[in-house]
Image (cartoon, rainbow, N blue to C red):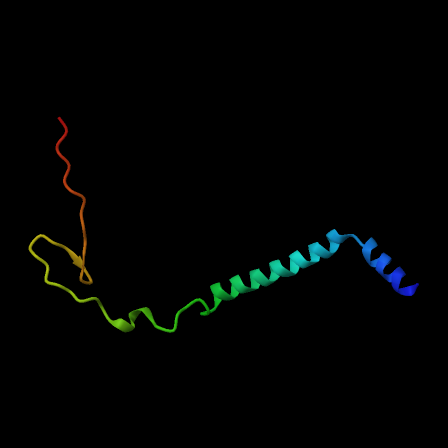
Length: 82
């Protein structure tokens, strides 16, 4: 009867306590992964963003502004209010 008594004793323990411990461990694991991604270079790719060099710059036409070869767009002028 020892085995049956062990099964009964195990089932008398509240299931919520075991589930809570499991959720706490999973939460700590997820927090560890997030902290590692934030505070280390695990989230970075192997290729550095500047390895390709600057984008090809096309010559700016008069009145056109560029920053590092990228045209800076402006909102169209509004019609004057009447």
